[in-house]
Image (tube, rainbow, N blue to C red):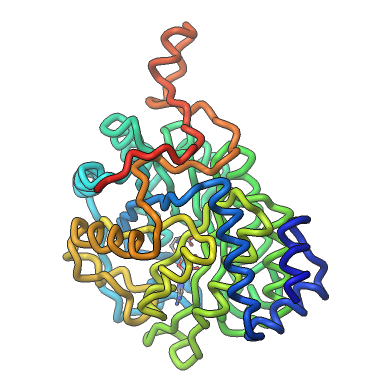
Length: 383
Ligand code: SAM
């Protein structure tokens, strides 16, 4: 079985039957340990022992969608909804910057209140206040033009999990107005515009079988995202999936290591969901090749209202407490939090307008644009 791990490391891919064998043998003595060790070797070669932080700002819990798995779904009348103002979002960023965050992730349900104009103003304001930081958006499905406007305003990365690359499974997780085709179109459009793109899926979501997981792995290989977010599915009590079984931490971590060997340069978060299902889940993720953590920067008063699933961790902690706690956890497993933007290794730098304007003089241009650093892991560490 180790031979399959070696082949995956060497060739970056296995056939469907080889992946099936590897996943079926997951609990064989020594196999996971060997896979994780190889994933770490590959990860250290590219990202050394750096762990990149993303400051997550969950700025609206309103959502027009009705995904069967998600606590924010519009039919969940028990959910308390909130929106942060532009000033509150900027305040979160200022606090995050002081704590050493150099990437802000703005995430929300699909909330029509945040029009292109409102969103672009927010992105421009963050850019102006923190030109040394990357701005990541995770707003769900929008029109090509909308993605383009936000990119022009200064957002450089976009997270949009594909949720599952299997058509039948997608239909089982979503109402009929949402389609896998459209989700994938959005992902391709984001890539075309020049975003660093993250896709991803939940592990153990209802209806997911081995075939679905293989479809996910093959989709990721073909799509070539810069980031893949995977975390266990966790039921939410006020959704149609309330009574379903949660996904397994062990399988999630195993898949993280597979992804590291498949695409060595990926940004791979050890997710909050993984830390929720297993108190040592995020550490296990890092030891299996994950290199990103996404602590919450949202104001504590709204944290518990952005409940995608039950028992979500860190809903009561101030940003600074989360930061200290994560630093300890990262160090505890022999890694270090790196204070940098944490771009994807090898991502061709894109010139990103700081203001959305397009000055004609090339010298003037330099002032308006920043070039993302390619991480070398050189270490400005907080200690
Ligand atoms: N609206 C945006 C979108 O659709 O991409 C971003 C917010 S959405 C809530 C973020 C992610 O949370 C989803 O892509 C989904 O994978 C994850 N999620 C939602 N419900 C979950 C659950 N019950 N367990 C684990 N993850 C969940």
